[in-house]
Length: 564
Image (cartoon, rainbow, N blue to C red):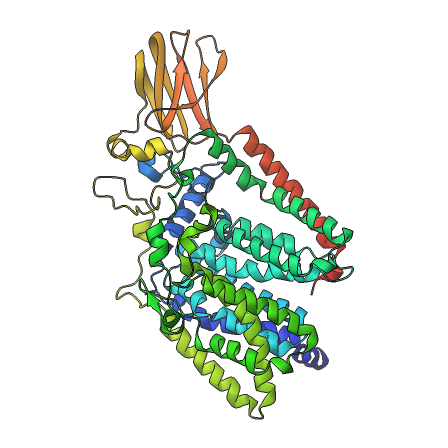
């Protein structure tokens, strides 16, 4: 027993992970308070999104994309349009608690700890130094913008991105190592795509540049590996991008309208000055690099000759990437003239996520050189730790004066004349059909019954329960057009059963108000049954995702000896 304990203590990797977990717990201490309010900024939307997704699952929906209680009970979809991982993974913690807020807090802690662990893995691959890897991991966990995402913005999707960025670049590092078939690149890219598709685009650009830099090492084996990983990524994420594209071609949704998701003036206003990067606080949030990272960058130039030749190339690459990211946040950079798919970033200071990532790699390496050069290592570690304490304390959001009350969020507020632009549960209604968005007043006053748009008929015995509904149509004269009490999203299914028991499928179209609409022809009466079953393409995409996961698991098992 003593020998096992001794071996455990001597295992530097395990000790490193324990240190990272300890720092992660320390960073999350303010979240443990009942006075911690994580409903600010993006937080309220993520809380409602969890509630809506869970309710959809409870209703028995195979595709939990329609949140039936939202938008006055007409149904609203986040998960078709917004990367879905942050709606599903936090719900895993429901096995420990009934609180959605606690689920979200546990998910935040998990992302912080994993981001540190994978940063450690990445830097250790490059340097083979446990100390440099730990320093980079701690820098990354406590980076001011990381803390801003936790306590000021409660930006859950960006927090998850902090975890997947190092995984992607572990994969990029492994890609150019002889005989290495690491699957990290696929896992990281899948995670990014299902977490924050806009940041995924920027990550792909950095990866492309990384490959161009290493073009001399590219061979047939690497090309085959990349193509295989692209296939796996497309398969595993198909349950998200296939329905997204299907809706893109079906009708006009607000989110797809050019410049709907960003504003040029906002882009310009979100730019930072050089002083902001050192001491900045803009729009009530902290937007600076932090002293430890700045010192690490300075040490990079001071101790450049002490950096080993094997590591120097990576330091140069990541330092360049970090500087490029930083420059893109500045007033001097013409961000507003970039292609529209890059302007979808919305806020220029979001590039700090990349600057923090790349600089933490470099700073961990160079701070380690600085510490090794001095004799009083313990004192230096203590100074650095005190700096982190100051950063954490200054970055945490002020607590509320009364305990946070989750109960008031469990039921979405109705859309009414008093509803603000940023409506709890629906953000800015950007996932509505354009017709529905243009008729918000109609949503506010419409009742939850079916409405006859044209023709004559009698509607009786209406029974609506979530995304399921039945009603009878009698005394139909000529052709009748009926608007259903559901916002128009693909996947609703309507059938008509006549008196003889014959069942026929009705085509669902979009009404002028952005709701689901059906036409009934050549029949006098019948029973209408409406359900949400998803489209055929959605069902195929789920099978494709399952196939991709199986392939990825097979590759993981085959190459498990490559895992570090």
